[in-house]
Image (cartoon, protein in one colour):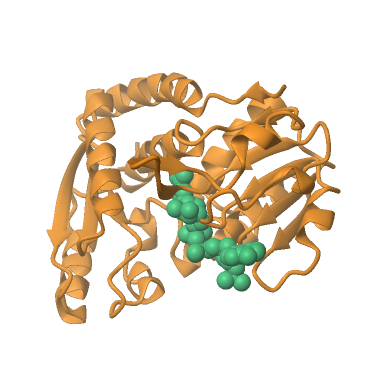
Length: 286
Ligand code: NAP
């Protein structure tokens, strides 16, 4: 039976430290402020953005939600991003993904001033991560690394298999773990022999977005399993959130495993606040 990695508790402890850092910044006369841009009517995005606003408020970080409707045009979104770039009271900008289909996320994230890019997703900040020179890395990969370090304080030399190669999770996570001297394998929809390759890993991370995708055949006994997936399903007539991993099956083999919910999710939001304070300090020369 695995150790359950309680992301909620770990995030709460981390947030206690963030709150102290926010107080220090306020004592110096600056109110950290995050702009949260949410375009469209994705119900999950609405929930995520309001959770981010709530956590920010509880830590002493102010925020504004910019809610734009699903038919928002390119010019309108560009105007908003440019005005937030120019607003000296805004220290951090989040562009919630996904955007509606007619708006290309990579095009618009690159309009965000890299110095206000709270999720480290602009091409410039991803490049800095690639060249081991980043101050602000993407929040979900940072949260995954933090959870891994609670089990393995030193991950150097361990083999991490990551399923998923998106720009928000898989790719930056691979780079982050490589920077920590892991041996990294990145798998995706064209990869062959997934279970066989995953069974060679000491650390298995799934960021696919498919319920029950990772079963026991993917897991070597003693592996640490991190489930990034968030999938909304209906079971016995009730709506439920599950990860990518068949938790009940895999927990019998893995050494440690994250649950969904209360695994990676709370860490992602905590790192958003952490990054916002780094950006505030840098922009305000504190
Ligand atoms: P995404 O952009 O859809 O990427 C999914 C990845 O999974 C792609 O690289 C895709 O491969 C790969 N994939 C799909 N089917 C596969 C298969 N049969 N075999 C192997 N690989 C396969 O998704 P994302 O934005 O990275 O998010 C992934 C999941 O994490 C989602 O459930 C999302 O909700 C969740 N998420 C959670 C958090 C959190 O804080 N907990 C944060 C972000 C995302 P290709 O590249 O070949 O298409």
